[in-house]
Image (cartoon, rainbow, N blue to C red; front, side, top):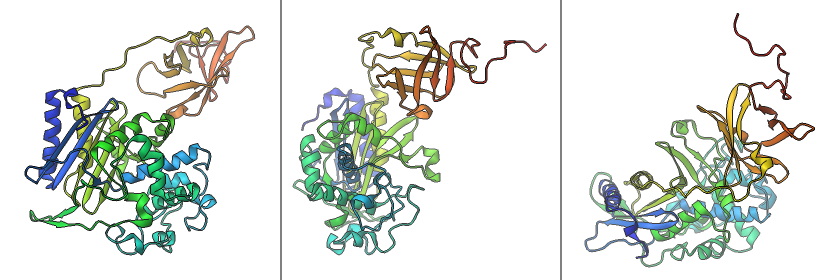
Length: 461
């Protein structure tokens, strides 16, 4: 056992155990294993099983289904970061002849390429991969169901194409590239494309009787990049820590933030839940908590990896049954239990290392028309702009090194903020994407577009 369970309070540990016990019992799962990560380290592991005298630990493999897609997305973004392609490049440019039309690499990552959800022919998760030896067999004669880029439509064949893209550009099989570039650097030694002892057996539980049927375990061939992997709660806990913090040997923290950013429009049925999809990661809002991760479901197995970046807590839940336990909800609940019972202790406040007086003079209150905003200079050397009261547009800004700043979030993402100075060097106003911010509401001494009425402010009479 590599976990340090003493780091969580006894009440928290009991609440976690109770939650997975309910999931295993009510979901009628032959076994269910879980882990919790906090501050980048595994702090709890628990398991429930129907076999007397046996407990699953963090070394037992389960099939993780579509969590495989997140691993594939990491490989694709490694290639992008190396300059092999842009996300806006049509797949056809780098992998010609697939029949995927003009779907871009980014659209395939975010399931907006318009491709069908499944491969044609027999149920691919319960039949040998040899039945689909070529990409044409994975895609079929009519792979596109929707115009590329118009809507989110989850596509397993789309990730098969991304796996083929990795193989073409690396000149090696997808699983070899994954092992060399992701699994080994992150120490995920119990993650593999085929099961290794000890591993769970996949079962189907009868919906109306407490009886079980073994599920077949097939090699998915060309579809491997969409759902082939086996892993453990121990390895997925380490992978969750990586998805939160990054590791420059694999992917930078900046690229992982990009993965966690919505890249696909939400379906109408998901708008109320705040659900969306990034680049290989699912994003949703549960009770005001932003959760990121992925689930997996293949015959005989269910899996979920969920993390809250703000709370720095992640959870993994794995079960060996085709249906029954709601593993994604269980993982979200494990995150919530820890985050609420033992809230994250913020790092100590620290001042700026150096004070740039040309930046410091911009701090304070500004007005966009009659709307009041505060501009703050933070210790991480960003500028932070937001309304003084109520809701409104807000963003952090990163310095460009030339006296301008680029917005990082929301309405102002990518917009340029600059201080416009008078001939004597004093600040006249701030320009933010043509919006003028002045020190006083409609300051008559500033260059306000449209000018300011010379009669000034007045009453009704």
